[in-house]
Amino acid sequence: MRHIITYVFVCFVLASQAQNVTVTKATSQSWSGGMAGHHGTNYSITLTTNDTNVRLDTAWIDGNFYPIHIDKNDTIARKVDRKHNMTTYTILEYDAWVDNPTDPNSLANQMAKKATTPRPHREYNGAALVTYWLHGKQYSVLVKAFNQLTPLCYP
Image (tube, rainbow, N blue to C red; front, top):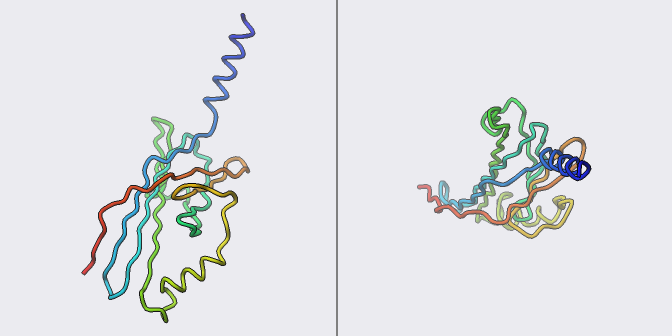
């Protein structure tokens, strides 16, 4: 009986120390305007974890590659709640296009660039994949879908 209790206790301790990065919120918001022919999408992904040693690496959104650079002193993108032992990361990315085909930022030119961008370390079925490093190993968390916000129309 004592061995069973010890085994259950060890399993509980290991499970409680397991890294758990979860997606708490993911939104996308299309926009258009400003100058004629300009449009795009803003993305926001909020992640929470119980380990302050997590280092976010890359976000893959709709096949696009977005390197993530969040400093430990960044109090906007990284919030630490010491009372509840939680760290919250907010990733803000965007896509922007111009409808003029001769412009280097046009949708057609961006699609050509997409073919030369690096691929994620694993295939994923979802809206986005965020990779991170913890204790020298790379992990990933899947964003299943984005909550679509009301589109913005700039004058």
